[in-house]
Length: 434
Ligand SMILES: C[S@@+](CC[C@H](N)C(=O)[O-])C[C@H]1O[C@@H](n2cnc3c(N)ncnc32)[C@H](O)[C@@H]1O
Image (cartoon, rainbow, N blue to C red; front, side, top):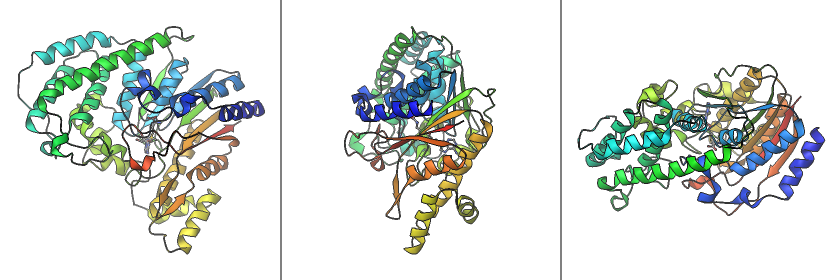
């Protein structure tokens, strides 16, 4: 069985469909383009790998993504009628996934949109409904008052499923209309000439809403012929190292994910990217313990894998021996006097290993794991995360099946943090737990 899967994956790698390296709007059709989230995966490639595994296993499978982000894998799983479990520490990411689940479940988004547009059009109140440190820095008063009108309109929608879809549209509007640049994931002041005028904000929201409705229509056309009508979706907003997944009685699991490839601060600051939207969306519509994660614009990044510098030595000790490539990297850094510069790499890898161990311990049955990783540099040294990741999962008892390299569309590097950029240097490792 595994040999034939290996053959299928080799074929895929040798004859990569053009969709694997497409960039721009076309690369993220239907629900894949609901919110521009950092480091999204290439949907078609991951879907093709799921198909190859399904063809090889011949059993019912459920799909899991423990770093679900904006839900690329979730959408691919649901398009195939497969049950799905997603975990993420970021409440905004989980909200987007909840919105996708609501759309899949048939929420009356069109009705909610009509009600919302009517409410916003007739709201002339200038009140600003939110307050948080930095509000006036990131939003001028007239902009904050227009956003408050949209927020009030969304809060009046009774159906929580449709409301979550509207919050997703609102989050995208906030990204476009705040005073922070759209060209970086970090909070960074825009030049005054680049700001969106308050009078345009409702129009921007309406345009985003119309695009969302088109995406929903395209998605619903695709699932109309799906063999299983109501796949189950479970979403957990928590640190993956604590998440209680719950065993599904030895059912075959396809775990497909793209983990972070280093601590958020020195790689991709998912928390900063999400901060403003999370401040505008009422906490009651966000999952998880939201307040501590919004204490400031860095709190979520600090709570994510590799974010805390506490117990540095204990973590470096814990990860030693888990991966020969990591040991060699750390030894090389020590030899060149760069141990301090790479200490966050050791901390991240220790957290990542703890996450992998927890996932395997809580879902111990037969499984295929598909992990797409990006490499990075730290202290001017290349961190071989693809090798480290493969060695860590194999140390947990997995058997390596294949490593796929995707042909890259261009030289755009994720480190430049282009908005909407996908991981562009990557290896996808496929392993099997018997
Ligand atoms: C590369 S992104 C996933 C992107 C996703 N594949 C997509 O296509 O949108 C990695 C995710 O890991 C999440 N993450 C980081 N630390 C985490 C932790 N300790 N527990 C759970 N999720 C975490 C981040 O919030 C981020 O959403």
